[in-house]
Image (tube, rainbow, N blue to C red; front, side, top):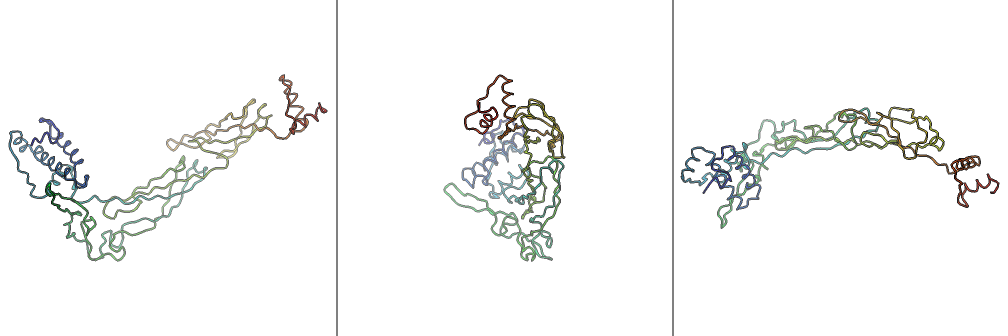
Length: 362
């Protein structure tokens, strides 16, 4: 067998190239990844043989000289896994990976004004933590967990199945210890041997200025503890920003509508408008059009990234009155005539009736 061909490397490949090639192929063909497939298992065996030879300078020279090797793997499938584990630097296949603790999510509510200043909230929630009575061991005081007799502390058991293609080995979680590699003869009365317990946590949540609706604050290791020694989960606090009666938010800008009269739109005016920090004077330029936007620079919300504030954007709406006095009707007609226009309001409209009265039925 040409081991260079098995690993897909050239004959002058260095040790690092050989190791990279083996690790790539081993990940693809590992029995745990392929559900114990006979073809993958045989392929895994071949690339393990190739790596065992080419990673050893003496064996590699012997292979290059045409020497033969006897790979019976008398230690069983575990011997192949030893090669795999040595290449990857960990014990994969002999013990199952410790599962991480569960991440948790909580919610807090704030007002739009608090996005400007930042806010604090007191949060109370429940999580799974290490049992204090047994310090997470699951064993009662004065006792300790013992190595599982079924799997010998590996957390996994291997089963052999004889097929027409030969012996097929499958690896699964130990049914007696659940993969921990240990059993408990005298369980802790507080946690019933689980090693974990439900606790109530109280914490202060600091909400930074500029936070957006739906964003999360992350608190590391404040979620559920792992039951088998894995990393503790995290806590994610979702921030809900309440709707505002006046303003709507667009990124860091605040938008609002401002109703003005025909006279204000035509002549201009100085009016008072609300902001998140109180009242502010706004100059409306003469000739402003309905839908035109005016801005108060720096009166929006701060950026979460750098603290720079957006603008308050004011959309003008010219308010056309539905009812007019007779004098107002006269003035509007005169205004129209100044522009060279003779108005002809539709028959039957309230305003037309007022105009007809104002002009003596003409």
